[in-house]
Image: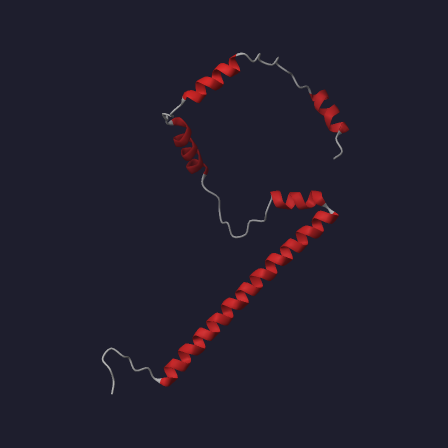
Length: 130
Protein backbone atom coordinates (compact mmCIF):
# COMPACT_ATOMS: atom_id res chain seq x y z
CA UNK A 1 0.00 0.00 0.00
CA UNK A 2 1.35 3.41 -0.97
CA UNK A 3 1.28 6.29 1.43
CA UNK A 4 0.20 9.68 0.28
CA UNK A 5 3.10 12.00 -0.54
CA UNK A 6 5.55 9.27 -1.49
CA UNK A 7 6.88 9.36 -5.00
CA UNK A 8 7.50 6.09 -6.69
CA UNK A 9 10.86 6.22 -8.46
CA UNK A 10 11.65 3.81 -11.21
CA UNK A 11 14.72 1.69 -10.31
CA UNK A 12 16.46 2.60 -13.57
CA UNK A 13 15.93 6.33 -12.96
CA UNK A 14 17.28 5.95 -9.44
CA UNK A 15 20.37 4.12 -10.69
CA UNK A 16 20.98 6.75 -13.37
CA UNK A 17 20.61 9.54 -10.82
CA UNK A 18 23.04 7.83 -8.44
CA UNK A 19 25.52 7.27 -11.26
CA UNK A 20 25.30 10.94 -12.29
CA UNK A 21 25.91 11.99 -8.68
CA UNK A 22 28.92 9.65 -8.44
CA UNK A 23 30.39 11.02 -11.66
CA UNK A 24 29.81 14.62 -10.54
CA UNK A 25 31.64 13.87 -7.29
CA UNK A 26 34.52 12.28 -9.21
CA UNK A 27 34.74 15.31 -11.50
CA UNK A 28 34.80 17.65 -8.50
CA UNK A 29 37.50 15.53 -6.83
CA UNK A 30 39.64 15.55 -9.98
CA UNK A 31 39.16 19.31 -10.29
CA UNK A 32 40.37 19.85 -6.73
CA UNK A 33 43.30 17.50 -7.35
CA UNK A 34 44.31 19.45 -10.47
CA UNK A 35 43.95 22.72 -8.57
CA UNK A 36 46.21 21.44 -5.76
CA UNK A 37 48.77 20.20 -8.29
CA UNK A 38 48.78 23.53 -10.16
CA UNK A 39 49.23 25.49 -6.94
CA UNK A 40 52.02 23.18 -5.76
CA UNK A 41 53.74 23.42 -9.13
CA UNK A 42 53.57 27.22 -9.04
CA UNK A 43 55.02 27.33 -5.51
CA UNK A 44 57.78 24.90 -6.49
CA UNK A 45 58.68 27.00 -9.54
CA UNK A 46 58.73 30.22 -7.48
CA UNK A 47 60.93 28.61 -4.81
CA UNK A 48 63.44 27.38 -7.41
CA UNK A 49 63.41 30.77 -9.11
CA UNK A 50 63.99 32.46 -5.74
CA UNK A 51 67.04 30.28 -5.16
CA UNK A 52 68.47 30.78 -8.64
CA UNK A 53 67.41 34.26 -9.81
CA UNK A 54 65.62 36.47 -7.29
CA UNK A 55 65.53 39.45 -9.63
CA UNK A 56 63.53 37.54 -12.24
CA UNK A 57 61.18 36.18 -9.55
CA UNK A 58 60.36 39.64 -8.22
CA UNK A 59 59.84 40.99 -11.73
CA UNK A 60 57.43 38.14 -12.46
CA UNK A 61 55.55 38.89 -9.23
CA UNK A 62 55.32 42.58 -10.09
CA UNK A 63 53.96 41.92 -13.58
CA UNK A 64 51.67 38.88 -13.45
CA UNK A 65 50.43 37.65 -16.79
CA UNK A 66 46.94 38.86 -17.53
CA UNK A 67 44.94 36.27 -19.40
CA UNK A 68 41.54 37.01 -20.81
CA UNK A 69 41.24 40.42 -19.22
CA UNK A 70 39.77 41.91 -22.37
CA UNK A 71 40.07 45.51 -23.47
CA UNK A 72 40.70 48.14 -20.84
CA UNK A 73 38.26 50.89 -19.93
CA UNK A 74 37.85 53.90 -22.18
CA UNK A 75 40.01 56.92 -21.34
CA UNK A 76 36.95 59.16 -21.15
CA UNK A 77 35.39 56.85 -18.55
CA UNK A 78 38.59 56.89 -16.50
CA UNK A 79 38.79 60.68 -16.64
CA UNK A 80 35.14 61.01 -15.66
CA UNK A 81 35.60 58.61 -12.75
CA UNK A 82 38.60 60.45 -11.28
CA UNK A 83 37.14 63.90 -12.01
CA UNK A 84 33.96 62.97 -10.15
CA UNK A 85 35.98 61.51 -7.29
CA UNK A 86 38.36 64.43 -6.78
CA UNK A 87 36.31 67.46 -7.81
CA UNK A 88 33.34 67.01 -5.49
CA UNK A 89 33.94 68.61 -2.09
CA UNK A 90 33.59 66.25 0.85
CA UNK A 91 32.99 67.34 4.42
CA UNK A 92 35.38 65.32 6.56
CA UNK A 93 35.07 65.21 10.31
CA UNK A 94 38.38 66.50 11.60
CA UNK A 95 38.60 65.69 15.26
CA UNK A 96 40.67 67.10 18.10
CA UNK A 97 43.67 64.99 17.12
CA UNK A 98 44.13 67.08 13.95
CA UNK A 99 44.70 70.18 16.10
CA UNK A 100 47.17 68.27 18.28
CA UNK A 101 49.16 67.10 15.26
CA UNK A 102 49.14 70.59 13.73
CA UNK A 103 50.44 72.14 16.97
CA UNK A 104 53.18 69.50 17.23
CA UNK A 105 54.23 70.11 13.63
CA UNK A 106 54.34 73.89 14.06
CA UNK A 107 57.64 73.71 15.95
CA UNK A 108 59.36 71.69 13.20
CA UNK A 109 61.53 73.82 10.95
CA UNK A 110 61.01 73.19 7.25
CA UNK A 111 63.77 71.54 5.29
CA UNK A 112 65.84 73.55 2.83
CA UNK A 113 65.04 73.10 -0.85
CA UNK A 114 67.25 70.46 -2.47
CA UNK A 115 68.01 70.49 -6.18
CA UNK A 116 68.93 67.11 -7.64
CA UNK A 117 71.06 67.39 -10.74
CA UNK A 118 71.64 64.76 -13.43
CA UNK A 119 75.20 64.44 -12.14
CA UNK A 120 73.87 63.51 -8.67
CA UNK A 121 71.69 60.81 -10.21
CA UNK A 122 74.57 59.50 -12.34
CA UNK A 123 76.82 59.30 -9.28
CA UNK A 124 74.18 57.45 -7.24
CA UNK A 125 73.46 55.01 -10.06
CA UNK A 126 77.14 54.38 -10.66
CA UNK A 127 77.57 53.24 -7.05
CA UNK A 128 74.45 51.05 -7.09
CA UNK A 129 74.99 47.26 -7.33
CA UNK A 130 72.47 46.71 -10.13
